[in-house]
Image (cartoon, rainbow over all chains, first blue to last red):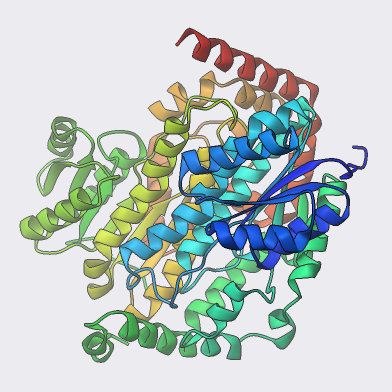
Length: 291
Length: 285
C-alpha cells in the first residue's frame, strides 16, 4: 500500500483533550492535517484545539451517546469539508482495583460501554466518510487485549473486543480502498495510568513485575507511533515496540503466565485484600476463605 | 487442581434448550448432576428439562436481563439447595454483514447476548460458585482469535468473553473455585447451520483455508470435551482439540492470515457484494 500523506487531510480524535489522544491530534496537525478534538467536556476540547493551533476545532461529545458522536462527525465535515482519518481513542479505567466478583455492576458496565461500544459508535459514525474518501481508522486497544486483566476485567474485556473488531474492520475496508489499524499501548504516562497506579494494592501487582515491563513512555511517543502507523496504513501499532514480540508469542506465553499468576501465593492474598476493600462483607469473607 | 466429581452437584446452563447447551446439560446430568436448563422460551426450557429427566428443571430467562439471571440462580438454589457449576453458553450469530452495513441494533444485540449475557450469568452465579468451590464455564469460540470479517460483533464478543474468563480464573483461585474458557470450532448446531453458512465471506474463507478447519463435529463430541474439562477444572477446552495448537500460534498466524484475507480477490468481491446487498435491502426497507 502506498504511504498515506496526511497533509491536507481531516482527522477526528476522541479522548483528545489530553493524553495519547491530544498528542495524536497535535502531531497529525503538525503533519498538515486539520484536527477535530473530541472530548467529553466542550471547554477542555476547545482549549486543547486552541493549543494545537489553526485548523483545529474542539467538540464536546460523549462516545456513549450515538447521536452526539454522529453530531461530532457532521460538525467536522461541515467545518473542514470531509473526514479522512478517525482515531477512536477515548477510554476509561475503573476507579479502584476490584475483582469481577467485587466490582459494582454499574462500574463494570460503564468501562465496557465507553471502551468498546464507544469505539464502535465512533467508527460507525465515521465509516461513510472514511470509505468514500479512502481514509483510515485507528482503534485504540491496549496490551490488555492479550494480557491477563486481573483486577481490571472490564478494561481487558473491552480492549480484547476492540482488537477483534479492528481486525475484521481492516479486512472489510481494504477492498474499498480504506484501511484500519489496531493500536496497542503498554504503560504510557497519562493521567489514566497515573491514577491507576495510585490505587490501593496496585503496588502489589508491580512488586511482582520486572521493572522494564513497568517503564512508562511519554504520551508524545504513543502519539508519534499512531501517526507513523497511519502514514503506513499499518495493521498494528505497538508502543513500546517490543510489545509486538509479546503479542506474537501470546498464544504460548498466556497459558504459562496465567497459570503462574493463578498459583502465586502473593496473588491469593492480594485477591482477598482487594475483595475485602471493595466488598463490605469482604472482611468476614477473608477469614472464611477456604485457603 | 484435583479432579472435580460432578455427582450430586448442581449445574446451571444457559442457552440449554438445544445445541451445545442442551447436550452439555444432558451429559452433566448423566454424570449425576442436577441441572437447570435456562433458555429464552420457558416452554422450550421445560421441555428440554423433561427430556433430560429427573433432577432437571427448565427456566425461561433472557440472559440480557440481569434481574432475570439473578432470579434464575435464586430459583436454582431454592429447588436444589445450591449452585456449583454455571455455564454461560447462550449466544447468537448475526446475519453476515460488514461493520458499516450491519444495522446498529443488530451489532449491539450480539454484544448484549454474547458478552453482557455471559457477564450477567457469571455475576449472578459467583456468590454461590465461590462459596462452594465451584466453577464457571464461559463459552467463547475460536472466533475469539480468528478474523471475524463480516461478523465483527461475534468476534468482538467472543474475544471479550475470553478476556473475562482469564482474570476470573485468577480471581477465583483463592476461593478454591475456578473458571474455564471453552473454544469451539465448527460444531453442527442450528446456529452454525442457519447463521454462518449463509454468509459469503465465511464461504470464501472456507475455500481459502484447509478443509480440516471447517469439518464439523457432532454436538455430542463438543459437550463431551467440555464435561471432561469441567471434571479436570481445565483453564481452556478446545473442540475439535487441534484448535489448541492454532490458539498457541495465534500471535504469529493471525497477522499472516489477516493479511492473506485482506488481499484475497474473492473475499474482496464477497465483501463488495455484501455491502451492495445490504444497501439494496435497507433502501427497500
